[in-house]
Image (cartoon, rainbow, N blue to C red; front, top):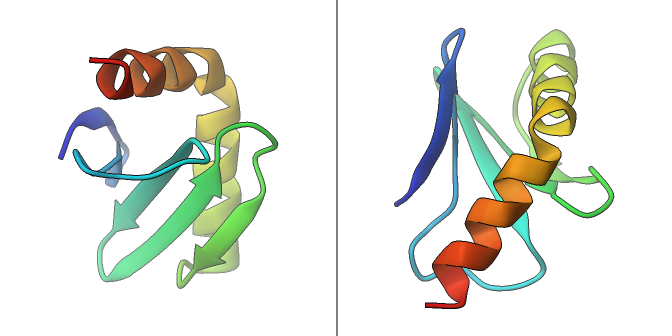
Length: 76
């Protein structure tokens, strides 16, 4: 499970055997979210609204970096 970022109690990662389209998983406490890296669409979430907003904002800030890491990992 490649970890992309640990920030403010959030863990951003993807699974080593994940599947397209490019997306990132987010954990915070007991909550989770799955966010599409292309369009930043929330695919699913159990995070509180404020946590989800912070997660999406963080993914947006690191979108290019996360996409690069996704493509590096899955083109091996």
